[in-house]
Every structure is written in structure tokens, then in C-alpha cells.
Image 1 (tube, rainbow, N blue to C red):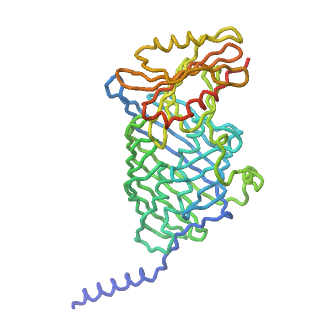
Image 2 (image 1 turned 180 degrees about the horizontal axis):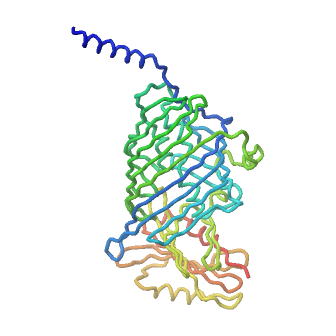
Image 3 (image 1 turned 90 degrees about the horizontal axis):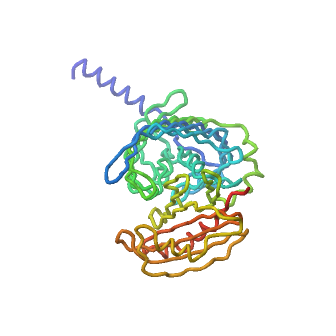
Length: 439
């Protein structure tokens, strides 16, 4: 062996020996009720939405920015990750522009306490202080979920260059999916310096959200404080392609999430022992998960279950679609009718004639019709019939709801014949929850 080769071999052994001597880093985040953290999450998103309009494909530019700052308190743990946490938001804002038309969203002061519960169907968020609107629900549900952070780590001593597979539970929570079809996210420890370990998360993910298939490509970099045993930062980049679903258009987007996380000495008053004691431990009451909707002109309000999704709205109409585990089962159209004298309403026979003459509707059989009992001076008539729309078999239930001051609202619920049992009484529950505006 030459003198150069001997020197090279000695150098190689020395470098290899020094690497071998470096102790592994325990990349494990503590998940416990004594952990107090504050998260600052910022989002930037750009992409396109794709629509089918009169048989033609059209697109609209989508841009969004959001910021959420909240303290979080652990309530329960499942599969090694937080499954129930209470969040006290000090900031929750989003600005969304579709084809240049911008809307801004924020949380009202009395809805800043939010409970986040992970389950098999994704993330359930609600406010114990009152019903959220759909926009408010999206605001607190669709930002990056820190409940996944412990699952992004290997949970074991790790050396530089080591890799690991991210669990499906953590993947579902990080990617905000209702279900995961394929999860191939992999982590890697890249550097350790000054007590901070840097790691990456990369890979493809396929899943489903609101009945639409989602394909993601993730590239993220995180920092871990070794002494504190906590993820302190994360930059999560995601390329996102979604098929058209029953309540959402197809889309192609790129998003960047920047998470900063720090310890806090004490929980804020909103997360005190007395406050979290009021959070239900078992099934969440329907009154807490119901969503509120207000007519654009204040003519009526509505509390409805989350299975109903608003898909269209004008000055006179509101369109909602009913999903059952991501499957489209029915559509409800609420129409504001002409107001009459207080205490009056359209006669039932006139209502039935109007139904029979509806454009495109060929009625073949009346299943049931008649008045239904109501409260607060309201009057309700229902007619359920079989027939055809554009030559396709359909079952429609027509409601006429009248208020004591002469307000009238027509509700048409359409479904395929094989979905009648799936709808059950959910359409009636929707109609009975309508309250007319007060003078």
C-alpha cells in the first residue's frame, strides 16, 4: 500500500470513527397534559379551481393567506397522538380570492374557544360556547393541525441520515384528510447543531376529503429542540390536486405552511380547569356541532347538521347538498316566497298545483302529503312524490313553511329513489330548524 493510500485509509477510519461516536438523538415528543404550547401558523396558497359550465371546462385563479395563533391544551390521547385538544385563539384570520373576488374571514370574540377532536373521519372542531358558521368552521378546521407533530417523528433514538415512515394517523392529521388511501411520507434526520435537530418529511399521499379524491406531494423541513423534546418549527410545502367532488370543484394548488411553536408558562383563562371541565368527554351533543346559517337579507336563520353543505346562494335561493360519509345523497333548495298578511299562508291546494306545474318535473305518484305540527306560530305543509326530472327517476319532497308574520319559504329536497332511506328524517329536521327573522 502506498504512503498516500495509507494516509487516506487512516483519514477514512478517523472520520468514520468520529461519526460512529456521535450519540443518537432521541426524536420523541412528549405527549402529556402538562405540556403547554402556543402555535403560530401561517399559510400561503396559490392555484386554480376548475368548473364545468354548460358542458365547457372553465378555471378560476385561487389565492389565500391565513394566520392562526392559539394556545393548546391536551384533553385526551389516542394512538400516541393528541386526540382531543382545546384551543384558545388570539388570532384567526384568512383572506381568500377567487378570480379576483376577495373575502375575509375571522372568528367572532365569543367563538375563540375551539375543541379539536381527531377521529377516523378526520378532524371534528366545535366551539362549546355556541354554533359556528360554515366559514368559521373552515377557518379553524383547515389550518395545519399540530396534533400530528409527535407522529411526524420516529419516537426513538435516531442518527444523522436515518429515515423512518410517518404513521397513517399522523399523515391523515397533517394532510387534513377524511381518509387516507396511500401514505408514503418518510422522515429523515439531516443535521444536529447547537441542541437543535433538523429533519425532513417527504413523499406522496393519496386520500379522500368530502367525497373527492386528493393527491398530494409533500416536502417539509422541521426543527426539534432536543433538550425540550419538542418540535419548534416546521415549513410544510404541499402540491395538491383534487378531483371534483359532490360539494367542491376540482383544483390544483400549491401551499406553504410555516409553523412556529413555543412553550408558555401558564394556560390562558380560556383553557383553565373550569373551562375545559365543560368539554364533553364522550359523544358531542348535536347542539355543539350544528352549524348556523343566516340569510343574506336577514329573512331567516338556520341551524343544520354538518352533513349539509352549502353549494350555492343568491338573494332568493340557498342550495345545500347532503353527504353521507362522502357520498352525495340529496339536494335541498330553499326559496324565499312572496310574503303575505300576518297569520296567513298559501293554501295547500294552491301549493300542490304549483308543485305539479314546476318546470321539468313530471309527477307520477304522491307518497304522502299533509300538514305537520310546528311551534312558535309556524305552519308547515309537506308533499312527497315520485316522478321524473329530465327523464330520470327521482323522489322529491316539497315543503312550504310559513311564519306568523306572513313570511313564506319553499324547500325542495330531491334524491334518487334508492337514497330515500339514507335521507330518512334529515330533510324534515333541516326544515324544522328554520327560524324567520324577527321584526
